[in-house]
Length: 294
Length: 233
Image 1: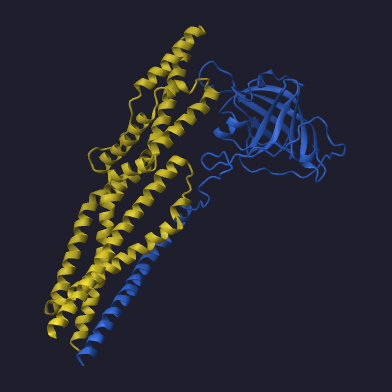
Image 2 (image 1 turned 180 degrees about the vertical axis):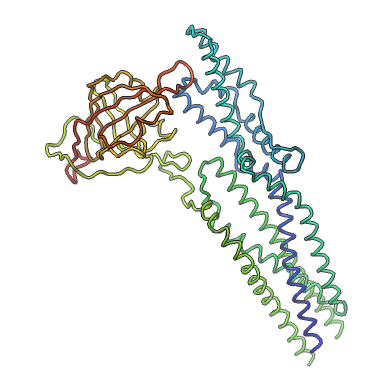
């Protein structure tokens, strides 16, 4: 019995390490597979109907601007449709991940505005012709200013996740560095987990029956530790308190965070299930051994 | 004996599971306390808005609650016992709190407290950096030239402009017609002088103008409804 106590304590200690290495593995995998994965952002765009929200915003902008510019919103909206905005949104996400993955040296996102420029130019020319408005330098300046203003607005609206702002503020550079280390972090966490698992196997080599128990315990505890905060965040709807109430940005950010928490929750539940399987395996092995002994 | 040993082992395994959970939680809480304390302020700032969804009754956009008000009395009949001093009701942002009227030009425009693109769609907007009607200082109101202030340039010196609110009636007389660049702030800044400043963009054939046209008005009278009368007029 006395010999068993240090053996037991060692098992507890290494299982405890295994719990945190499992959490580390879960979190780094979550970052790699979801948080910093281009597909996750694409899912959010679809799920939160960001294209529709972007279109509403652009439509409202041009309608309001018509009051001060005298240019009917149809001049813009006949060429700016949902498909164009959807492509723009996807382009902005792709451009951001090209930069984050190191494929490009800077974040560059632009759209093809040839049709928009043509539409505005046509309107100006038609107006000038009908009203005998002189096409002087001021005319060209006004035309250019309206084109630039509308393009800027569309680019800003399609950049749902505000990658341009993140890039300007230097955050995207920091995330890019993080992405560079992420693969190493995932491999390191998996390696540590495997080493700890081997150590536990080694510790229990004389009593292999206990191995499923310690593994199950580690998985179960790691799962519970992740489930509790995720459950709290979901239950309290914590992210809905996001201060930016612009419908489009709100949906993009809150949708992204909620999806991330949901995925963490799924991952944690799977880990708990693995833990329960471990316990069940241990129970079953004990039962069979007991029967054999009989 | 073997049965008792078996029971003891079972108990140890069960207790170990609970202890492991408690111990891991304690380590997690302990380990996360310092980072949480560090980022607590930022987290509270980013997720502080508990009224994220605009009210169903509101026409609000981006968290803005626009409130129309059809209770403001604008009839020419005025109670006899109106006072020169009274209680001023400071409106909420996005609330229509006055009606601007110019009998000569025949216009009547709702005035909202605060300024935003959405509010400019609904009427004229009063800058929150200017004083509330009834207070001493510069009352600054603007609107789009293609909508509510389309005939502002037709106001002439001496024309009377009346602002009706739920708590009083404020009469002004146009003094100066001015034009200024949108970068020039002197007409819209707070002032010690009691006045009303109305402005809009200069009408332009295409695009927006950087020139603003305005009317500076002097106060003629400030009349407050007796307490309790207000909107009933």
